[in-house]
Length: 150
Image 1 (cartoon, rainbow, N blue to C red):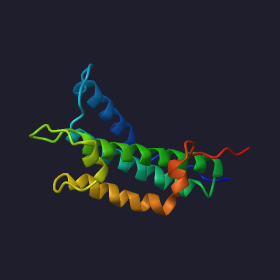
Image 2: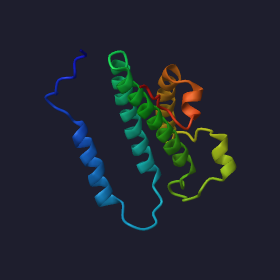
Image 3: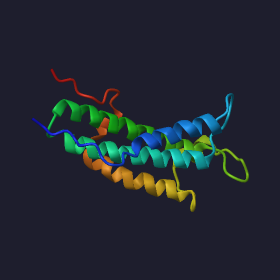
């Protein structure tokens, strides 16, 4: 029988969840609001960290309990897809200072904008290397990422 992880002395995941809930309650008012690039950058960093955590769990769990591993891998893939969309939203968001919104064509070229905007791209590329090594292109583009085992 596989061994379950023992509870750690300091489990920080509930604190991270509480911090996000707190941020939402305090900083995101009701009504229309454009997400700032700074917030999108922070959300992207959070998603990439969470992707790394789920990747670790999926990698360690799958050999022991295949069905649980499949679900963790599916969740990991969905997190990568979310991070990819947040990365694209960042580049489509209004520029700081000018407030200018890039054209659709400018967004599609996906050219780096330079520091500090390049930081999100560097983080995204580091994570993309892991994604490419553990996921197929079909996994990333298929509407259903989990396997059903009976």
